[in-house]
Image 1: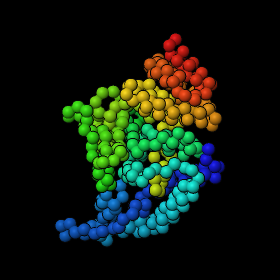
Image 2: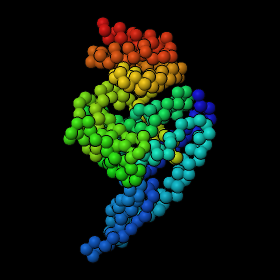
Image 3: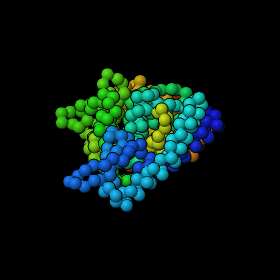
Image 4: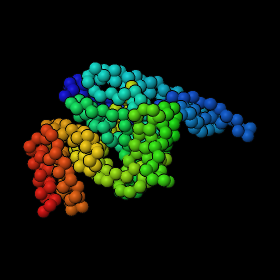
Length: 352
């Protein structure tokens, strides 16, 4: 368990980052105003290198009162934004000795760029082991297994407006391939397993770091237009994406990402472990270790969360997954007897 002081600092960091998001405007972007001559007219543009590399945003005509006001607003906002950045740096420096998980430099650089490009504001959710480690920070604990990986898995629903869950999502584009390319870290698309299948994965040349884009369903990868890429379909992933929240990740600095709930993350890990083929049983064991750690913490800190997460699996539509999750739980080492009983009752109900 992280100290109370560290947990308090982490909560403060989350608030500072959320405040920064609310204030986001030209004033929160690093850049400069430039003038361009177009057909004898002079125009103001704002040039920034944040997000997808160098971009110019149109402001207005030179000597236009609206454009001049925008420039004045930017200059006025910069000091407060600088103060916000200073607070983030100070909090991150104070959190490091407290035992929170900090991403390695390459992974942190990728996640920071994805956040700047708007991936997490557009419904992207960090999943996999990076989410597991971030969930530990959010829970105020440092998981004992220390199972780390450089992979960054981002899951999302395939289309904005394609289903009730997405109605509230903001419209916009976050170019994941373009973002990775501007990092100049050597990311290349991984070819699909079948000819003419679009890539849903990007790997750093000569390194283990890769970014996988996932979406619910079965079959071939499907396009995700708002991310300008394709996503590999993963059964039961919709269950994981139905309950998410924002939380900071530390990656040199800190940014807000979207994470799945602890309970659904653990249940999903059990399901994934059950579905792995015989040659991936080491990964299945890792999945169950992560599930056990999260479930053990839940029983102590948030005892009602697991019951709520299991309610959906008690429905007829989820009966098959309920059986798979319960079967996987029996193979997990270290689960408490009261937790095992909940899965046993779930399976009994599903088979009735």
